[in-house]
Length: 209
Image (cartoon, rainbow, N blue to C red; front, side, top):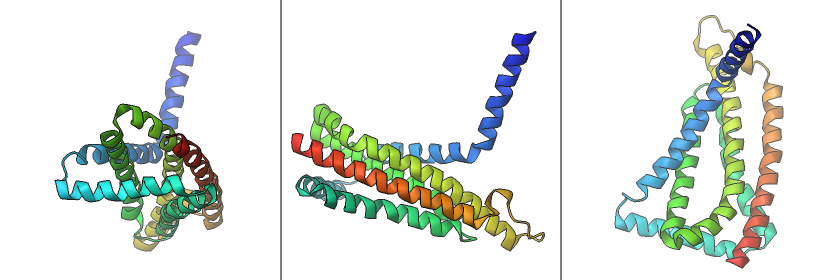
């Protein structure tokens, strides 16, 4: 009897966890879908477009080999902060939801295209080495974006409900702007740490490669 009760409680706990974090899982699915789309679509684009993409990514990777840790850190910080800034602004806009859903998809697509390029150009061995460089900071940054998307979603949803609904009630999870601001400050510090990790790993492994 006890085992049945424990099993039911475990199932209920899992359902509650999924229910409370449903939007988080949605953004995870969006990012993964973007990576898959980017990886697959790379093989179907025209030759001229593929050559342009090859050129851009190749120049980017070659430049990375020549830059110091500080410059790599600065470049990564600027690139990553653009995503975070757009999410922050979208979160405080009543019409920001489409951007909040589109941004993780675009980030996933760009990651997928980069993975396909490296595998196409470097083969399996080179792909493994570059995967070491890219996987850690890329995974951490994607996680940061997913959590930032969740906060921006609730904030934007609350504002839109206050603007467009008759009762003018504020959505309970986005009622405090200062909490929203504090969480994005935490995300900002996380981006700084991730950018530094990216700079260090890229600087070390690019010399080995």
